[in-house]
Length: 158
Image 1: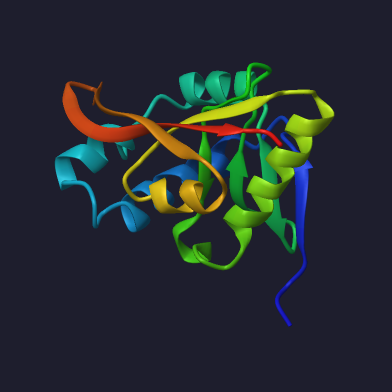
Image 2: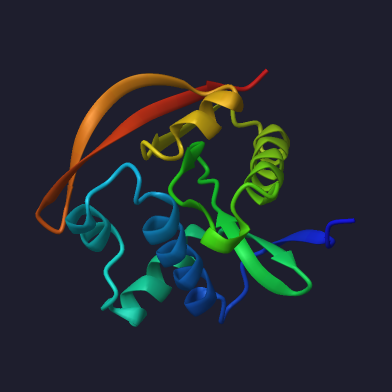
């Protein structure tokens, strides 16, 4: 039987653990779709911890925990935009992302948000498609001077 997973709101002090999740997701899971230079630009090993903490605090993500340990997180902005959606590399394909997505969809319904929007990586695109999102634009984004592809995706709430 898999360990119990719990989804909870962001708490002060979560920022370092969420950065570790972000870093592992990018470097372990996206490496099949992006170059080493793109991965390093997206999630550099050397980062400004204060700037990260400020951003993640503003985003107020939901945190997925297993046995009290954060293993994934995702946010839902008031306009329906999902800025961050990441699962730790060692917890991929274990249902963490799906539980987070189900939670975001429930929250969108409670908040009367009529559509969700995300800029999905090549790696995450199939997951979002399975969850009712459609690609509305393919784009190149520049992060720290490095260009990388992603897809603007929308999901209309039903």
